[in-house]
Image 1: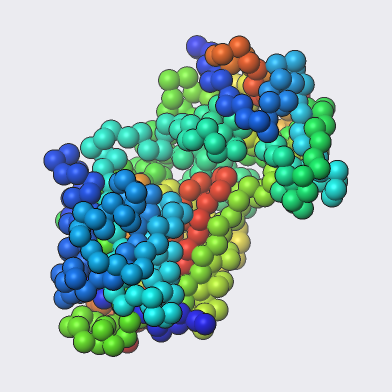
Image 2: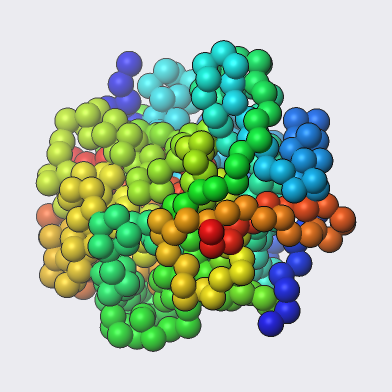
Length: 389
Length: 128
């Protein structure tokens, strides 16, 4: 069975808040859900499938669906960190293709900014049952220095430079200037990235994504329902998911699960990287983008630094317009999980609803890719390929 | 500069022997008797072949730096690293007793044991 062409993304909504001390996380989930359903032209009672991940309070789908008083016949709470929501789109398509639901709702929300969470720089012990906990936590493993070790190895093996990494942020900032909701709207230069304070070598503050409150939601449905609605038709044609682990001690920091999830998605869709007109690429850090672009096949392994340099990711300038909302680096990283906003901006591009200054003309084929967890240890990877028909 | 304080590691039924040996200044790693391969972090079941017949082997504690990062945004800055042991496995650790600017990928290092807050000891690495 393939999911190719079996499911359509008909609703997409990014909560406009970036700081929400006066709202509960559950409220943000429901507000995002309402926004996506309104966008689709559907109502709460049309939903019969619900998907959420670890950001959902309480018992995940049970608690959120109870709050919204949904009537469900299918649910899924796969949690692969920031990549979860791309996995959910693929799983929703599988469920729709199998007749297990007709209208799938996917939500994300969180308030790390209001809660003062040191997302990237605080070591977190996790549960004592995690088998690796004694062998990672005492050494001060954080999100930021985990990715930094991948960056350091990439520089060592391939000659990637800090200037090249900075170009990823520069491109994101060129896009964010047009997004009124973006946290960081100022256009920055390579020199400004390099002059920002070092967080953990070789990653500067401006190599790291923002910490924001917020949320987002998607509605996925089958073709007959999609065609009955008034929205442009965005069809899912390929999906891949692949976690990558520490290999029992034989790990390699230079590549991610995108090597496998990307290949699977391209094979299912029957298209090549060169065909993609717009790409949402997970940007927790600048290095994340460089490694994933290689792994997805947009350039050879090791050439990602050269590929992203000189504005090649800037819409209207470069070969691969990416993250035209400003991405996690400048716009929004709600709940510290950027996969949801990656799908939302790809949908905007395919509908022709991105900001006119960053809209890719005649965009009919787009990719969204997410990474979750730590590329230095264990992470999820998920790739979606969508077309406008 | 203040010394980095190491938290007491979580000890599980699978890792008691490892932490006891660390207290005695010995670095143990796991090898599978069925397939002969080493693995890291230590497990009761081999992650290569799923055999439950794994054994503790004492490493000579020599390795090279596979990658590292100096965490500057911390009360006491520190160098986190992956060290590749002579046995082939790559383990997360800290690099100590070295100016941060001198740390290099490929650099030979040797294990030593840093005291933890609860009286245990934690394997860390210093330039060989």
